[in-house]
Image 1 (cartoon, rainbow, N blue to C red):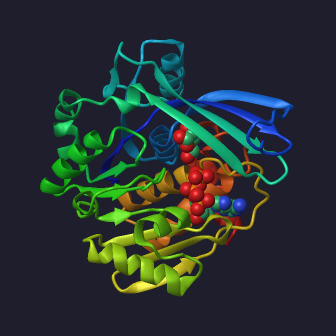
Image 2: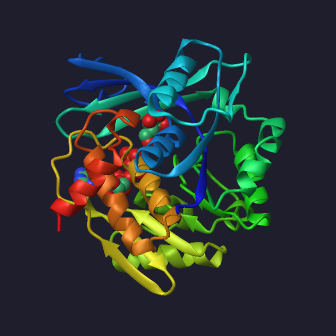
Amino acid sequence: MAGKVVVFGSFVVDLMARIPHLPVPGETVKGPMFKMGPGGKGFNQCVAAHKAGADVTMITKIGKDSFADVALNTMDELGMVKDHIFVTEEAGTGIALILVDENTSQNEIAIVSGACGMITEEDTDSVKELIRESEYVLLQLEVNQDANERIADYAYRNGVKVIINTAPYSEISDEFLSKAYMVTPNEVEAESLTGIKVEDLESAGKAAAVFKDKGVKKIVITLGGKGVFISSDGREEIIPAFSVNAIDTTGAGDAFNGGFLTALAEGKDEWEAARFASALAALSVQKLGTTPSMPTREEIDAFLESQG
Ligand code: ATP
Ligand code: RIB
Protein backbone atom coordinates (compact mmCIF):
# COMPACT_ATOMS: atom_id res chain seq x y z
CA MET A 1 0.00 0.00 0.00
CA ALA A 2 1.23 3.49 -0.87
CA GLY A 3 2.40 5.76 1.96
CA LYS A 4 0.67 9.03 2.82
CA VAL A 5 2.13 12.18 1.28
CA VAL A 6 1.60 15.90 1.67
CA VAL A 7 1.96 18.79 -0.76
CA PHE A 8 2.54 22.08 1.05
CA GLY A 9 2.39 25.00 -1.34
CA SER A 10 0.54 27.49 -3.45
CA PHE A 11 -2.91 27.72 -4.88
CA VAL A 12 -3.48 30.50 -7.40
CA VAL A 13 -6.00 31.02 -10.17
CA ASP A 14 -4.30 30.85 -13.56
CA LEU A 15 -5.44 33.48 -16.06
CA MET A 16 -3.97 32.23 -19.29
CA ALA A 17 -3.93 33.88 -22.73
CA ARG A 18 -2.57 32.24 -25.87
CA ILE A 19 -1.04 34.78 -28.22
CA PRO A 20 0.94 34.70 -31.51
CA HIS A 21 4.14 35.96 -29.83
CA LEU A 22 5.23 37.12 -26.37
CA PRO A 23 5.10 40.95 -26.09
CA VAL A 24 8.20 43.10 -25.75
CA PRO A 25 7.95 45.89 -23.09
CA GLY A 26 5.25 48.37 -24.07
CA GLU A 27 3.75 46.12 -26.75
CA THR A 28 0.15 44.91 -26.79
CA VAL A 29 -0.49 41.60 -28.51
CA LYS A 30 -3.99 40.45 -29.45
CA GLY A 31 -4.72 36.82 -28.77
CA PRO A 32 -7.38 34.34 -29.84
CA MET A 33 -7.87 32.49 -26.57
CA PHE A 34 -8.26 33.02 -22.81
CA LYS A 35 -8.71 30.36 -20.16
CA MET A 36 -9.15 30.66 -16.39
CA GLY A 37 -8.56 27.70 -14.11
CA PRO A 38 -6.94 26.30 -10.98
CA GLY A 39 -3.17 26.53 -10.75
CA GLY A 40 -0.21 27.32 -8.55
CA LYS A 41 2.74 24.95 -8.36
CA GLY A 42 1.59 23.32 -5.12
CA PHE A 43 -1.96 22.75 -6.31
CA ASN A 44 -0.88 21.48 -9.74
CA GLN A 45 1.50 18.99 -8.11
CA CYS A 46 -1.11 17.83 -5.64
CA VAL A 47 -3.76 17.32 -8.32
CA ALA A 48 -1.24 15.45 -10.49
CA ALA A 49 -0.48 13.13 -7.57
CA HIS A 50 -4.13 12.71 -6.57
CA LYS A 51 -5.25 11.83 -10.10
CA ALA A 52 -2.29 9.45 -10.40
CA GLY A 53 -3.58 7.57 -7.34
CA ALA A 54 -1.56 8.98 -4.42
CA ASP A 55 -2.93 9.25 -0.88
CA VAL A 56 -2.10 12.96 -0.86
CA THR A 57 -3.26 15.94 1.17
CA MET A 58 -2.98 19.55 0.05
CA ILE A 59 -2.00 22.30 2.48
CA THR A 60 -2.47 25.85 1.20
CA LYS A 61 -4.23 29.13 1.92
CA ILE A 62 -6.93 30.95 -0.02
CA GLY A 63 -8.89 34.18 0.39
CA LYS A 64 -12.62 34.69 0.84
CA ASP A 65 -13.49 35.52 -2.74
CA SER A 66 -14.80 33.96 -5.92
CA PHE A 67 -11.28 32.78 -6.90
CA ALA A 68 -11.24 30.68 -3.72
CA ASP A 69 -14.23 28.77 -5.12
CA VAL A 70 -12.06 27.68 -8.05
CA ALA A 71 -9.91 25.74 -5.58
CA LEU A 72 -12.77 24.37 -3.50
CA ASN A 73 -14.92 23.36 -6.48
CA THR A 74 -11.99 21.61 -8.16
CA MET A 75 -11.21 19.70 -4.96
CA ASP A 76 -14.87 18.68 -4.63
CA GLU A 77 -15.02 17.51 -8.24
CA LEU A 78 -11.86 15.43 -7.80
CA GLY A 79 -12.74 14.11 -4.34
CA MET A 80 -9.72 15.68 -2.63
CA VAL A 81 -9.32 16.24 1.13
CA LYS A 82 -10.06 19.90 1.99
CA ASP A 83 -9.32 19.75 5.74
CA HIS A 84 -6.07 21.70 5.51
CA ILE A 85 -7.03 24.60 3.28
CA PHE A 86 -6.59 27.74 5.38
CA VAL A 87 -8.74 30.79 4.67
CA THR A 88 -7.91 34.45 5.32
CA GLU A 89 -9.79 37.71 4.92
CA GLU A 90 -6.53 39.65 4.91
CA ALA A 91 -5.64 38.91 1.28
CA GLY A 92 -7.25 37.75 -1.90
CA THR A 93 -6.69 34.30 -3.37
CA GLY A 94 -3.46 34.28 -5.39
CA ILE A 95 -3.42 34.72 -9.15
CA ALA A 96 -1.01 34.05 -12.01
CA LEU A 97 -1.07 35.91 -15.33
CA ILE A 98 0.23 33.49 -17.95
CA LEU A 99 1.04 34.31 -21.56
CA VAL A 100 1.69 31.37 -23.86
CA ASP A 101 3.21 31.82 -27.32
CA GLU A 102 1.03 29.57 -29.46
CA ASN A 103 3.82 29.07 -31.99
CA THR A 104 6.72 28.16 -29.71
CA SER A 105 4.79 27.10 -26.56
CA GLN A 106 7.10 29.36 -24.51
CA ASN A 107 5.49 31.21 -21.63
CA GLU A 108 5.83 34.25 -19.39
CA ILE A 109 4.25 34.24 -15.94
CA ALA A 110 3.57 36.97 -13.37
CA ILE A 111 2.37 35.70 -10.01
CA VAL A 112 0.73 37.42 -7.04
CA SER A 113 0.69 34.87 -4.22
CA GLY A 114 -1.94 36.70 -2.14
CA ALA A 115 -3.33 34.45 0.59
CA CYS A 116 -0.89 31.59 -0.01
CA GLY A 117 1.97 34.00 0.62
CA MET A 118 0.60 34.65 4.13
CA ILE A 119 0.78 31.24 5.82
CA THR A 120 1.21 31.85 9.55
CA GLU A 121 2.95 29.98 12.33
CA GLU A 122 -0.47 29.06 13.71
CA ASP A 123 -1.30 27.49 10.32
CA THR A 124 1.91 25.46 10.16
CA ASP A 125 1.59 24.39 13.80
CA SER A 126 -1.87 23.01 13.06
CA VAL A 127 -0.58 20.57 10.40
CA LYS A 128 2.16 18.99 12.49
CA GLU A 129 0.24 15.77 13.08
CA LEU A 130 -0.52 15.41 9.37
CA ILE A 131 3.17 15.94 8.52
CA ARG A 132 4.28 13.44 11.16
CA GLU A 133 1.97 10.76 9.72
CA SER A 134 3.34 11.22 6.19
CA GLU A 135 6.18 9.54 4.39
CA TYR A 136 7.03 12.46 2.09
CA VAL A 137 6.30 16.18 2.06
CA LEU A 138 6.71 18.06 -1.21
CA LEU A 139 7.43 21.83 -1.13
CA GLN A 140 7.98 24.52 -3.77
CA LEU A 141 9.08 28.17 -3.44
CA GLU A 142 5.78 29.91 -4.18
CA VAL A 143 4.52 30.46 -0.60
CA ASN A 144 6.13 32.62 2.10
CA GLN A 145 9.54 31.06 2.76
CA ASP A 146 9.32 31.23 6.57
CA ALA A 147 6.38 28.80 6.37
CA ASN A 148 8.35 26.48 4.06
CA GLU A 149 11.25 26.56 6.51
CA ARG A 150 9.05 25.65 9.48
CA ILE A 151 7.50 22.72 7.58
CA ALA A 152 10.86 21.45 6.29
CA ASP A 153 12.42 21.69 9.73
CA TYR A 154 9.53 19.91 11.45
CA ALA A 155 9.37 17.16 8.82
CA TYR A 156 13.14 16.64 8.91
CA ARG A 157 13.23 16.38 12.70
CA ASN A 158 10.44 13.81 12.58
CA GLY A 159 12.03 11.59 9.93
CA VAL A 160 9.62 12.61 7.14
CA LYS A 161 11.38 12.87 3.76
CA VAL A 162 11.36 16.41 2.39
CA ILE A 163 11.35 16.99 -1.37
CA ILE A 164 12.04 20.58 -2.41
CA ASN A 165 10.98 21.57 -5.90
CA THR A 166 13.06 24.75 -6.12
CA ALA A 167 10.56 26.60 -8.31
CA PRO A 168 10.16 29.41 -9.02
CA TYR A 169 13.80 30.25 -8.35
CA SER A 170 14.40 32.29 -5.19
CA GLU A 171 17.45 32.51 -2.98
CA ILE A 172 17.26 29.84 -0.29
CA SER A 173 19.53 29.16 2.66
CA ASP A 174 21.90 26.22 2.94
CA GLU A 175 20.17 25.45 6.23
CA PHE A 176 16.85 24.98 4.38
CA LEU A 177 18.50 22.89 1.64
CA SER A 178 20.13 20.68 4.23
CA LYS A 179 16.66 19.52 5.32
CA ALA A 180 15.97 18.13 1.83
CA TYR A 181 16.10 14.42 1.13
CA MET A 182 15.66 15.30 -2.54
CA VAL A 183 15.68 18.44 -4.68
CA THR A 184 13.97 18.73 -8.07
CA PRO A 185 15.16 21.92 -9.82
CA ASN A 186 14.81 22.47 -13.55
CA GLU A 187 18.05 23.22 -15.40
CA VAL A 188 17.73 27.00 -14.97
CA GLU A 189 17.10 26.73 -11.23
CA ALA A 190 19.94 24.21 -10.90
CA GLU A 191 22.30 26.75 -12.48
CA SER A 192 21.08 29.60 -10.26
CA LEU A 193 21.46 27.49 -7.12
CA THR A 194 24.83 25.89 -7.90
CA GLY A 195 26.52 28.29 -10.33
CA ILE A 196 26.97 25.42 -12.80
CA LYS A 197 25.37 25.60 -16.25
CA VAL A 198 23.56 22.30 -16.73
CA GLU A 199 23.92 21.20 -20.35
CA ASP A 200 24.69 17.47 -20.30
CA LEU A 201 25.33 14.50 -18.05
CA GLU A 202 28.74 15.75 -16.95
CA SER A 203 27.65 19.28 -15.99
CA ALA A 204 24.51 17.92 -14.30
CA GLY A 205 26.76 15.65 -12.25
CA LYS A 206 28.82 18.68 -11.16
CA ALA A 207 25.66 20.55 -10.13
CA ALA A 208 24.49 17.46 -8.24
CA ALA A 209 27.80 17.38 -6.35
CA VAL A 210 27.16 20.95 -5.13
CA PHE A 211 23.73 19.91 -3.80
CA LYS A 212 25.25 16.83 -2.16
CA ASP A 213 27.84 18.98 -0.40
CA LYS A 214 24.94 20.91 1.10
CA GLY A 215 23.45 17.70 2.51
CA VAL A 216 20.90 16.71 -0.17
CA LYS A 217 20.79 12.94 -0.82
CA LYS A 218 19.01 12.65 -4.18
CA ILE A 219 19.12 15.13 -7.03
CA VAL A 220 16.61 15.23 -9.86
CA ILE A 221 17.15 17.94 -12.51
CA THR A 222 14.40 18.24 -15.12
CA LEU A 223 15.62 19.14 -18.60
CA GLY A 224 12.37 19.93 -20.44
CA GLY A 225 11.91 17.97 -23.67
CA LYS A 226 15.37 16.43 -23.16
CA GLY A 227 14.23 14.47 -20.10
CA VAL A 228 15.52 14.31 -16.55
CA PHE A 229 18.89 13.85 -14.85
CA ILE A 230 18.93 11.70 -11.73
CA SER A 231 21.68 11.28 -9.18
CA SER A 232 20.92 8.60 -6.61
CA ASP A 233 23.12 6.22 -4.62
CA GLY A 234 26.19 6.81 -6.81
CA ARG A 235 24.35 6.27 -10.13
CA GLU A 236 23.87 9.24 -12.49
CA GLU A 237 21.86 9.11 -15.70
CA ILE A 238 19.63 11.13 -17.99
CA ILE A 239 16.25 9.47 -18.62
CA PRO A 240 14.97 10.83 -21.96
CA ALA A 241 11.51 12.42 -22.19
CA PHE A 242 8.80 10.67 -24.20
CA SER A 243 8.48 12.04 -27.71
CA VAL A 244 5.06 13.71 -27.97
CA ASN A 245 3.43 16.67 -29.69
CA ALA A 246 3.60 19.30 -26.91
CA ILE A 247 1.12 22.17 -27.19
CA ASP A 248 1.46 23.75 -23.71
CA THR A 249 4.37 22.93 -21.42
CA THR A 250 3.23 25.27 -18.61
CA GLY A 251 3.14 23.09 -15.49
CA ALA A 252 5.22 20.26 -17.02
CA GLY A 253 7.51 20.46 -13.99
CA ASP A 254 4.50 20.24 -11.68
CA ALA A 255 3.17 17.20 -13.54
CA PHE A 256 6.59 15.56 -13.21
CA ASN A 257 6.89 16.35 -9.48
CA GLY A 258 3.39 15.07 -8.72
CA GLY A 259 4.11 11.88 -10.64
CA PHE A 260 7.49 11.37 -9.01
CA LEU A 261 5.99 11.80 -5.55
CA THR A 262 3.24 9.29 -6.34
CA ALA A 263 5.68 6.68 -7.60
CA LEU A 264 8.06 7.08 -4.65
CA ALA A 265 5.16 6.68 -2.22
CA GLU A 266 4.28 3.43 -4.02
CA GLY A 267 7.78 2.16 -3.27
CA LYS A 268 9.21 2.56 -6.78
CA ASP A 269 12.91 3.46 -7.01
CA GLU A 270 14.02 6.76 -8.60
CA TRP A 271 14.50 5.19 -12.04
CA GLU A 272 11.04 3.67 -12.22
CA ALA A 273 9.62 6.84 -10.68
CA ALA A 274 11.27 8.93 -13.40
CA ARG A 275 9.61 6.85 -16.12
CA PHE A 276 6.21 7.16 -14.45
CA ALA A 277 6.60 10.91 -13.86
CA SER A 278 7.86 11.49 -17.43
CA ALA A 279 4.76 9.71 -18.76
CA LEU A 280 2.50 11.88 -16.60
CA ALA A 281 4.31 15.02 -17.80
CA ALA A 282 4.27 13.90 -21.44
CA LEU A 283 0.48 13.49 -21.26
CA SER A 284 0.04 16.88 -19.56
CA VAL A 285 2.00 18.84 -22.21
CA GLN A 286 -0.38 17.59 -24.88
CA LYS A 287 -3.27 19.49 -23.24
CA LEU A 288 -3.86 23.18 -22.53
CA GLY A 289 -3.65 24.54 -19.00
CA THR A 290 -1.93 23.47 -15.80
CA THR A 291 -4.09 21.68 -13.19
CA PRO A 292 -6.70 20.75 -15.85
CA SER A 293 -4.04 19.07 -18.01
CA MET A 294 -3.11 16.41 -15.42
CA PRO A 295 -4.00 12.87 -16.63
CA THR A 296 -5.75 10.07 -14.72
CA ARG A 297 -3.95 6.92 -13.55
CA GLU A 298 -5.70 4.95 -16.29
CA GLU A 299 -4.33 7.34 -18.92
CA ILE A 300 -0.80 7.11 -17.48
CA ASP A 301 -0.86 3.29 -17.34
CA ALA A 302 -2.24 3.05 -20.89
CA PHE A 303 0.42 5.46 -22.17
CA LEU A 304 3.23 3.53 -20.47
CA GLU A 305 1.92 0.27 -21.92
CA SER A 306 1.76 1.81 -25.40
CA GLN A 307 5.43 2.81 -25.07
CA GLY A 308 6.50 -0.77 -24.27
P1 ATP B 1 7.41 24.52 -15.98
O1 ATP B 1 8.18 25.59 -15.25
O2 ATP B 1 6.94 24.94 -17.33
O3 ATP B 1 6.37 23.87 -15.17
P2 ATP B 1 9.83 23.01 -15.66
O4 ATP B 1 10.88 23.85 -16.31
O5 ATP B 1 9.76 22.99 -14.20
O6 ATP B 1 8.42 23.33 -16.30
P3 ATP B 1 10.64 20.94 -17.44
O7 ATP B 1 12.05 20.61 -17.15
O8 ATP B 1 10.36 21.83 -18.59
O9 ATP B 1 9.97 21.50 -16.12
O10 ATP B 1 9.80 19.60 -17.67
C1 ATP B 1 9.59 18.64 -16.66
C2 ATP B 1 9.44 17.28 -17.30
O11 ATP B 1 8.31 17.29 -18.18
C3 ATP B 1 10.61 16.86 -18.18
O12 ATP B 1 11.64 16.25 -17.42
C4 ATP B 1 9.94 15.92 -19.16
O13 ATP B 1 9.81 14.62 -18.59
C5 ATP B 1 8.56 16.52 -19.32
N1 ATP B 1 8.49 17.39 -20.51
C6 ATP B 1 8.70 18.71 -20.57
N2 ATP B 1 8.59 19.18 -21.83
C7 ATP B 1 8.31 18.10 -22.60
C8 ATP B 1 8.09 17.89 -24.01
N3 ATP B 1 8.13 18.91 -24.88
N4 ATP B 1 7.81 16.63 -24.42
C9 ATP B 1 7.75 15.59 -23.54
N5 ATP B 1 7.95 15.73 -22.21
C10 ATP B 1 8.22 16.96 -21.74
O1 RIB C 1 4.23 25.74 -12.80
C1 RIB C 1 3.12 26.34 -13.40
C2 RIB C 1 2.44 27.22 -12.40
O2 RIB C 1 3.29 28.28 -12.08
C3 RIB C 1 1.17 27.85 -12.94
O3 RIB C 1 0.03 27.08 -12.63
C4 RIB C 1 1.16 29.22 -12.33
O4 RIB C 1 0.20 29.30 -11.32
C5 RIB C 1 2.55 29.45 -11.80
O5 RIB C 1 2.57 29.62 -10.45
